Length: 170
Image (cartoon, rainbow, N blue to C red; front, side, top):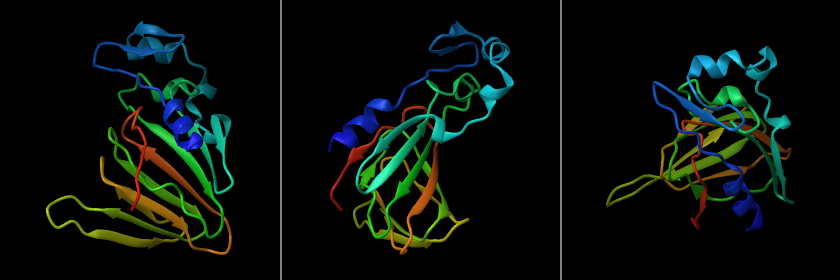
């Protein structure tokens, strides 16, 4: 549970409109002003250089605007999360109240599922292999399980700088 709380606490909101953006250490200024203050290397985003959370079942690496300023001020509003799930282990069943997730399988084989909305919800389930992707709609409970004999690695991209994470029981 501590890792869930830590994961949620590590996200950072950035508020952007057409005129101005606010990024830590850059203050309130135009997107062009922010870009002009960034080095070329600031546009290379590598989640392994961001915040890391390790647990016995999985490792999470978060790339957010606090560590990678190019993620803010571009009207992109995203968060990138790299997750290593140990062989045969689940990642925490959860939902994101403020963001849609696109999960990209990089290594291993995953079973992914989410619970659709409505009066007669259904469990949407797929098997993902390296190179496959799926989308978890905002607010819908979902889970990811590494079903291969080797560790699984995925990269998720959110359409929000602060998607949130709320654990659930499926």
